[in-house]
Image (cartoon, rainbow, N blue to C red; front, side):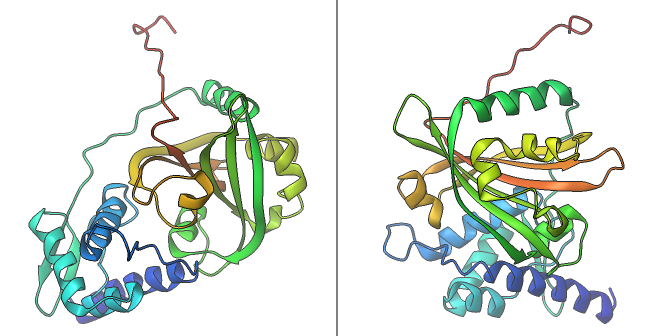
Length: 273
C-alpha cells in the first residue's frame, strides 16, 4: 500500500470528522452512567454497520478521535481496540485503522409507488412542527449521498412529528436537499405537507429510492425534542430519493421512538401481488 494511498485514506477520515464537527453538537452524555469510551464505540460501530463508514475506509486516528470528542488518547485507543476486538476494524502500525466489516445485507426490491403512498399517508396521519430550515455546508456523508462535493451549500430542515391523537412526539427528522431547491423547501410549505409531496408538486418526482433501517441510540437535540432519555433505543430510517435521471435530490434521516413506532409488512406469495 503506497504512502499516497494511505494519506488519502487518512485525509478522507479527517474530512468526515471536520464536517461532522460543524454540526456543533456534543454527542456524549458526560453525566450518564455509560462510560465515554463505550458511547463513542457504539456511535462508530453504528456508522460502520449502517455503511456510513464503508469497507476498506480509513478510521480516524487516536488523536483525531480524542480532539473531536474531547477525550484522552487512552480513551480513544480503547475505542479503536474494542472495534478491532469485535472485528469491525483492523489496526496496523504505520498504516492506521481501516474498516473490515462487510454488511451481509442485500437490497430488497420493493414497489416505489406503494412505498410512496405509504409515506404520504403516514405524513398526513401525523402533525409536524418545523424546527428550522437553513442553508449549511454539506457534511461529507451528506455530500456522498447527494453526489456533491463536501462543503457544497445544501438546505437542511429539521422537523418533529407528533401523533395526531396523543400529545407525544414520535419522530425527529432531518432532511437535506440541493440548494437549488431552497425556494420550495420552506418552513411554511413543510408545515403543510410532507417533504416528498412538496417536492413532487414542485416537479421533482421520485423515480427510485434507497432506504436502510437500523437501530441507534438517542443523542443530541433529539433527546429533548422527543422527551426521551439519553441513549434510548431509536429506529433510524435513512432514505435517498432519486429522479428519473438517477440524480439524488433528497436525503432524509428519520429517527423514531422504538416504543411508539413499528414497521408492518404485508407479505404475499409470489405472483399474488
